[in-house]
Image (cartoon, rainbow, N blue to C red; front, side):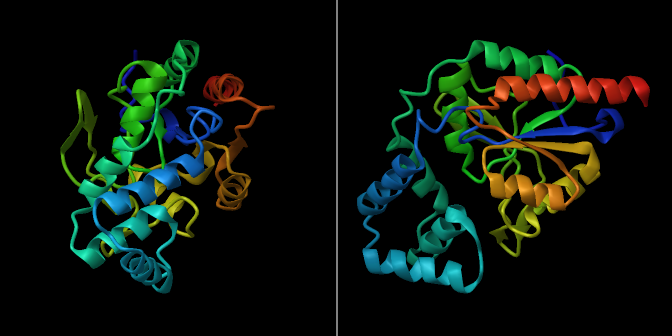
Length: 246
């Protein structure tokens, strides 16, 4: 398999995959289940409802979007290292319904043989590692989660989580710019040296598809009618044609 590191991309092309709802269908792990795990974790760590509300209010007042920023605010409000919260939260999620998808992995690898592929998710690396393990049988060493890494290396169980020092793509004075923010996608592309028109986003959220298109990215919705497998084949054909015809 060709290396999926994001340096020296052909014509600086880049294919960006979402995690939840794209690498696996949300019917196998719903947002509600993830939020239930958040609530369970909060109780286990002794974070009161009032502390949760106060931390959430800080995130809202600062206009720090997304559940990730909300958890950061709550953890910092109560003096808890956020990685403790995220690791416990992942332990409270049942990943057993996520089914193996070897053919999907083969399609991703075929695309990655020719063009850089990455995973850009608003979730935590611990969660992505569990998803990739359940879906593909192992953590794919070249998948990356660029939004929220802080160290050179992380581990979850037996799964190594490689880290690329590109925190600045989303870090904004200690907080984060998720994909749905005004800055998130563009900061990520700028750090990778990729022009918006050379990036393809595959995501299951119509709002993000529209947002990406307004920023000049090529974006395709992943849905039941347009599954990821089909989108990968489409993208590979389009990018290959562009490479051939210049």
